Amino acid sequence: QVQVVESGGGSVQAGGSLRLSCRASGYTSSNRCIAWFRQGAGKEREGVGAIYTGSGNAYFHLSVKGRFTISQDNANDTLYMDMNNLKPEDAAIYYCAMDYGHCNTAPLRKGDFRYWGQGTQVTVSS
Image 1 (cartoon, rainbow, N blue to C red):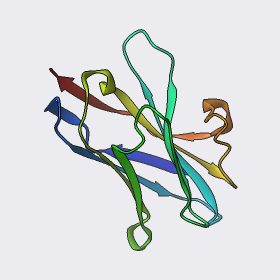
Image 2 (cartoon, one colour; image 1 turned 30 degrees about the vertical axis):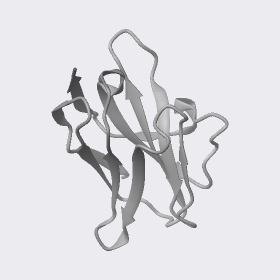
Image 3 (cartoon, rainbow, N blue to C red; image 1 turned 90 degrees about the vertical axis):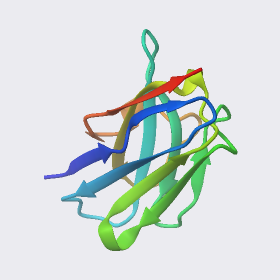
């Protein structure tokens, strides 16, 4: 049974940084697309970034490109998203999602992912 668990949310001031973690277990293939989505209050869930574990190629939404990075810790089956220079508009619940195969990033679509974490809150104050 596949499980996805996020951690690392919190509250920061604008310009600050946070690291989110996503740990997956129970998967049956090492070639996976792992993505981060976020949903702000009253907004649709949107894709923020993704990485294909087979190659390590990462994709970022234009709104976070240059500020967010994604890295893998394969020994611990954990994915990290480092969020720097956070802005109030980055505040949202962040979700980690996973599915097998390559990432479809044009754009990232929540319907492409079967496995989701419970979400972690990120608050950014101005």
